[in-house]
Length: 241
Image (cartoon, rainbow, N blue to C red; front, side, top):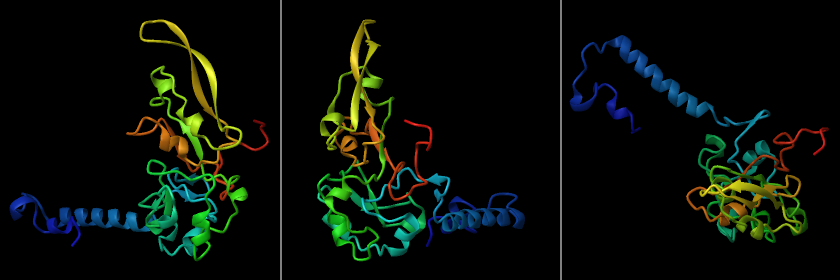
């Protein structure tokens, strides 16, 4: 029984029918429920069109393009079992109902280990295609960005270099720019504020995972810039960088 079905025909608490509840009102209520459930069913992939992508739908490295991925993935969970950091978790509604239980990266739980390709080795259908360590380290599964309302150097004027220290790329994808800020005493001081190099960041998520702000990290990874989808990019081609 669906959670809302117990109310149909009862007219509210204690089974009493409110005054004025006629066929017309019941029809409207029924149509609303049908419309709501229909919307959930038919919005299978609400944000995976050419112009709109779910920022939370970060797939493991080696994942093929989304439509092919959904056709191939059998929800076996093998990739989740072998992930050494438990970053690969079952999707909820990040990609709509059709993507339910498919593997998605949850950087608040783990991160994509720079030297690891286990998920691509165990996938039985090549929804995650086999990749070498060298290839994997060049694949972008997303891109990190700083939330200036939470990141310590931006929001509170406090020094923090945790994200840069953990960044695994040979040339750090996170770098610092020294900036003058005014502290709570009205004094000017220089502080290092982190930036992301769009060309170097691969979206591994270790910066998000290791961020000292645990409730919601000051740096997070979204799906923009992913290698598997040339249309889900954040930079305009032909404009330099």
